[in-house]
Image (cartoon, rainbow, N blue to C red; front, side, top):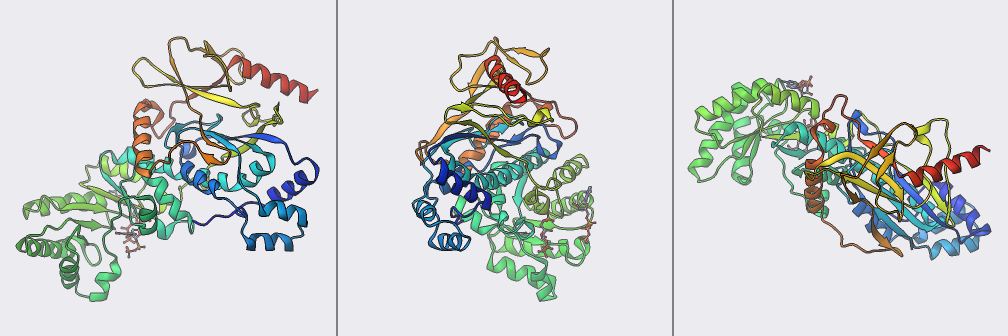
Length: 465
Ligand SMILES: Nc1ncnc2c1ncn2[C@@H]1O[C@H](COP(=O)(O)OP(=O)(O)OP(=O)(O)O)[C@@H](O)[C@H]1O
Ligand SMILES: O=P(O)(O)OC[C@H]1O[C@H](OP(=O)(O)OP(=O)(O)O)[C@H](O)[C@@H]1O
Ligand SMILES: O=C(O)c1cccnc1
């Protein structure tokens, strides 16, 4: 997608004008994190980083952006600065696809404050959305077990968000998408079936199936619920499957899109098997989500492929992931944002995050946030409860934030959506099951190093005084 530097909120440019006029040279560090997991879940899947890095490497204000900002009253010398604007900062980040948790930095931006502010809005826009959808996808994957998952959501998505939703869904565990543009750009397997309108246009369901199978025999899936699934759609599909066999072809599947999907899929399976069509797959769609799919599995539904649209690409029922971008250091000095709500108090300084790994190589259930260059920890402390600390001596500590961009250029090779999806899968396998259940999941611990906690508390006291 063509994103220019004007893909931001006006206040970023307004603040930038003031910095430019008064103190243009301040280096800043900002942390990206979110405060609670979406869907009342126990984790999130971090997604969107590659898109952020791609955009940042080429970010500019276009001539029309500059003309618009001139009309908005921005001064000539500042517009000259914007004309030459490039992001020249550095970024440290978790790997895209990793399993992440609330309140600890997922990514840090270190840059001139003007640059860091101008990129904030677009960075949050991309990371919050893709992380939300990748997380939803991973929950749907959890329910579908080894069933095939196809994203069908573009038509229901929030406008062009559908483009990024398809990518995020793939990272979170979907197998493919019906979205041609996203599939083309991100090299995601693309597939699909047919619409009711196709059958309606013929009036004659059998003729519609026949023509479709003749012209597009490869991966052919017939939609069998337009008139009557068991009395018309399925018998017609069987007729066409047999005709395909006589031509040396195989019908790939039939799709159910209404009614009781458990009952209909079991009936359909039995009837197909009786017709010696064991190889014909059953696709189901219709407002599926992780809960319906879990229930269908429990009912013994015979569904091989789940097509999921609305609930996936809109992240239903969560409208957004509330990820934030908070200043943690300015000109080498720590910065903090206070709040009556303890969870909203930000963490100062440039930092590192360590994941605790147990003796079996699984996630132990704790991440520790430390100052950037601290020695390995012997224990971590609860962010606010002085009575709680965790001994870390028996655990392996894995650093999570790595340099991905320096001076506005990537310093790590770009990763394809499939590499990221594979990585995400391998990380999720290390997360114990109790964090993945949908109801009251286990709470993953986030602790602070004693030094970071001490520095933060000193700053809190300083500002309260
Ligand atoms: N066996 C089942 N167990 C649980 N949920 C199911 C089952 N079968 C279908 N569902 C879900 O129930 C909902 C039914 O939706 P809806 O009321 O629109 O019925 P419908 O049969 O699709 O009607 P329409 O013909 O208007 O599309 C969908 O979300 C569907 O995925
Ligand atoms: O239910 P969702 O999870 O959002 O999945 C996508 C839905 O989009 C299509 O319906 P639509 O009525 O738009 O078109 P159709 O006539 O091709 O079925 C498809 O048949 C699914 O039912
Ligand atoms: O290919 C399909 O079956 C499909 C694609 C998008 C939306 N609904 C169905």
